[in-house]
Image 1 (cartoon, rainbow, N blue to C red):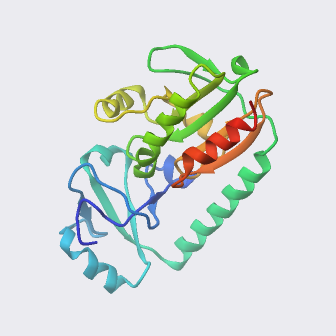
Image 2: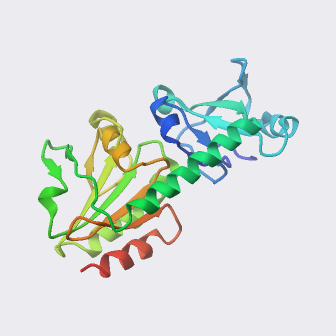
Length: 239
């Protein structure tokens, strides 16, 4: 952790963490848009250059980073000393999430109806006969932002080819519009997806889901370096 703007953290958001407006960190490189403020368990502010020493004193792998939704745009990060119980709960959540995802494959995708930023309504039922690609994301998710250029390229590749790309976020429309002032994401964006996230058992972000023309889930993909190739392969297999 030698540079404040390039902290070794990646956020694995559990369902329970999301609905309590916080998140656990796991271990992937992310880039902060502003200098973060680190808050210790006792409420004191920790200088960024002291992160290494605290991490060593707490023991390898025992430092967890948490964020509250209300503090997303302020760059406030809370430090938590992770216990064995917390690690076990995290492992169980991940296992439960994987089982839920596996159970969804080749099954009908849960229907939903959401409005885009222009007020147009979108539902899966109305998109039967088309391949649909969903991306679950949110505005301060670094891995989500990192994969957006590849996702934007997918939109270009399949333009006018009967493929629909929808980006679902639990953030509200106002926050998404602020995000778009500094970022490009060319999926059709559907804010306020919290209830839909529950239907799809979304427990970490980003997640992409490919749905066939009959409305069945054919692929679920988490963030990865070759995300564009993975999704393109799944799309091509269905066209």
